[in-house]
Amino acid sequence: MNIRRRTILAGIGALGLAGPAQAGAKINIVAAENMYGDVAGQIGGGLVNVSSILNNPNEDPHLFSASPSVARNLAGADIVIVNGADYDPWMGGLLSATNAPGRVVITIADLLGRKPGDNPHLWYDPMAIPDLTGQLVAALCAKDPANAAVYKRNGVKLLASLAPIHARMAAMREEYAGIKVTATEPVFGLMAQAIGLDMLNLRFQIAVMNGTEPSPQDVGAFEDDLRNKTVRALFYNAQVTDDLTTTLLNIAQQSGVPVVGVTETEPAGLDYQQWMTHGLDGVDKALSP
Image (cartoon, rainbow, N blue to C red; front, side):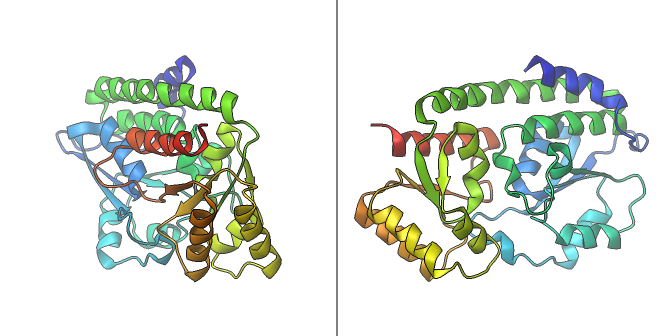
């Protein structure tokens, strides 16, 4: 965690950021996804205005269609946070269509060295929010030097709040490494990887994520894994469902395979830390003897 704190303090000079915002004005931040907007709010507090484009956990993010109001928000944004890795490809066109001199764009995929074709659910990568924190604190300090101490302090506080989550993940890896699990989509995949779980049926998951039909062989293998209890848990994305994923959910329930619900959008009433903790609680509940 000390490395991350140093990143916050040193990162201010590392970005080619635009000059300070107008004195006394709140900094406008637009996040493509609401978990990043939550983090921005925790760091900026009352000194920033934050809006998130994808913020409804009951809707399929893959079916999102941008409205004129989204373009207007982006036109007035001082800082924009994008997931990248082709998860929110519509953001590229919106940013190109809105001329905003001095706007800073932070792309999570770039921070993590991810590219299109990689698992795009980057908020489940344990390093995503620490890396975002360092870049966002640097951007806010450059935009609003008078309140730099506030942003740095809030950044350090946020990183400290992540430390118990990272420690718990390390402990879970000691306990659960190598346990076979499966999922209807690779939403929780990066967190499962960090815990050391052995994720099966990846071809099926990628097909569902990309909106294509899984092969009959992959469907059959998935069903066999559930019926034979080859896997100890099924991670189920309730935001992206169809007849096939619902059938797999039913087979898991009938076979006694625990189901762990996951979402692609931060649920209402939870902050990022609580959301991640809730996900780890689900893993513990499913895999504990």
